[in-house]
Image 1 (cartoon, rainbow, N blue to C red):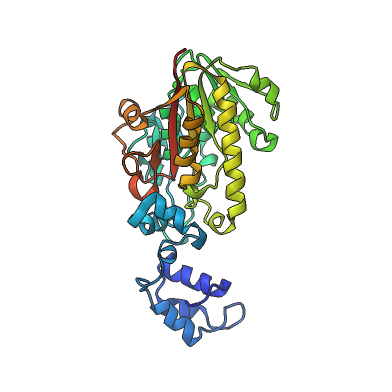
Image 2: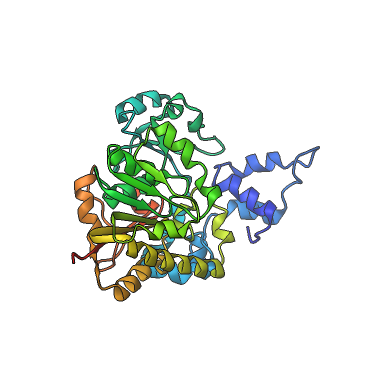
Length: 369
């Protein structure tokens, strides 16, 4: 379009995202009453031009120019493909709550929406993305949601919760619980036994967890007062599993929040990295010998993923890395391979390779005393 003005972006969205023909768009722009003004010759040419093969990688991949080095480091020659996948419309993924329902029951309840099994998560259900201007169904208005049969949760997030390794009778701390998505998933994995301590520093973000726990029938979760760091510190050396679902840039969920990619700034990224380092340091204190620290982000950037774990392991020699992909073979419906090149820590899931949101999962074991 040779322009990044609002009108140009809207016209191009009709052409490329809603698949409207140029003539159809021109018919909408008659200039009559509430109609947009007629197309200019430059706009007509822009709508007819679909060849951007000579444009820079960050243009073809549809991500901010300042993130080009990070995307290149993460994906090499596949950076454009990964960026394009992040610009596509996402499906609606659900996690079946095994405390109250089966996947077969949820599939039947939502079959009119085209519900199907997710490829990796054994408790996942997927509703394919709608086309053009069609809206996704309001899943939280479904009777099954009200009965606690399922929660809306991307398959990548489900995989992260499964790989964390929560099991019956374990002592677990979820220290970035947010609204409780992974807390609920782990409660079901633990069959309502053991204990999960759910904590977050933000009381507003934490507030929905109470209703969700009640609806899901999760009885093995103890919520801690938001922002009470002293209470969290009191669990030092006692946890079988500590989950750090770290605040991050959110680059992995751009399919669901397309505006976020243009609002992210270098300063915000640095702030997130500092928070991640602090949370890893806190979590390390809580893990007992032989226990696991699971670090998760919905980011694709090496600064928030590989580099954080490499720096942590360098400073915390009492921890060693576990093979997340190997653990996946025992808990997922099929093997999952990292988007990383060989030798990188953690498991990286992406829309282009796995059909999930972008998620990073690293599993660290505290060596036995």
